[in-house]
Picture (tube, rainbow, N blue to C red):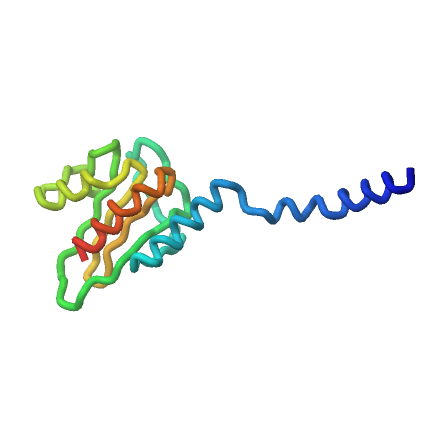
Length: 145
């Protein structure tokens, strides 16, 4: 009887440690982020003001994968994915650049925003898709950098 009481107290004392173990989804996210780092991308959680016209509200903060651009690039653009495959700018106009539109079409459906500044190119990705989506993201970022 004393052994059962000691065992119950031990289980009760160690049960909060289970909360520290990451879930399967969190482990998957960590694996994708480490793989992205190995492929030369940087990742950070970024707060973003999302347009009201998006069909589903992205997470806030959202994982932002980015890659630096070489000095001398002056083009800047920003597009949001309203529906799968439908990329719009802040005035809700579709992408006019055919080459960019073709590359945006290769991105997973859970990429919410693609943005380029003279310093970097970034994608806001929900990480809901499988890790097989990472090569498409890496290819897009490196092609557009």
